[in-house]
Length: 350
Image (cartoon, rainbow, N blue to C red; front, side, top):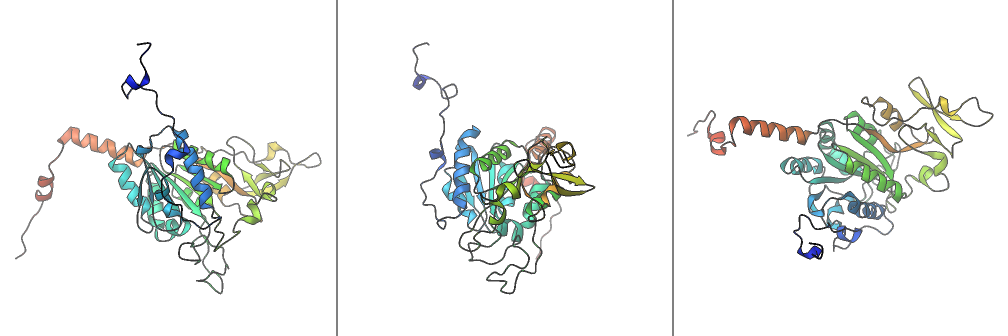
């Protein structure tokens, strides 16, 4: 046995092959506009997938319609480019039919929050074991620059020449209201943080939602520059870390909770405030109130939060459905489709 090579070993006990980014990269030409933030997200996903220890044949990427929804073509895994807004519903079917698969949903702020808003909400509230990544660029990019559900109030676009008069949706707040068990946010210009969030959501059992601020340099260039660019980011963004006080601006500022209202306080030798007065982040609280308060922090009044807002455990929909099916089969046998169809009230129309 000592001189037996791995080629002679059964596949079940041979050392697993170490996958790389190249293994998850398809042979399709990537067709996004030069400089689009989608490239960064794709690269982060392709780099992270090998670290998960999951065979690419066990992965499925489901998308709807939009620039982001080209994603399945570029992943060397199973994929499904579905119809507008229905990716969560189709992905739910994939996951419940084959629970062994790791199912990802790639959507945009238009696809996922407009025509697909209801499907997204119910997939999250059911706690289906899906990994939902939403590219948020606050615009419809594929159809050339109409306003989306996340576009800022008053924004002038091709479809709102006098300014948007809809109040925008906050995707993180919506996900928390739907009781998603994992909710996070990242940005396309921070590949290290983005990779960490992808790894965290991949490890989560249940509905995982990740919003990624993504720049559309053609139709909405610089939508997030006022708080995420390198020169201002430290002062205008705050990274959530479980169990740690909320500080930013290189530790010179923090978030204090005044009743139910977060407020910025100055820290330092001459300040009456210390780290003991700051709000401490807790991502695993059963009640989503804490996470919701953080999701409502908006620039310029408050720093914008990135990181994991919520991560809690709850039985997933697909797991509970599998248990019901197993119980039913044990009680009544495998079932008879013909008997099911013809076993109820039947009548002929003549």
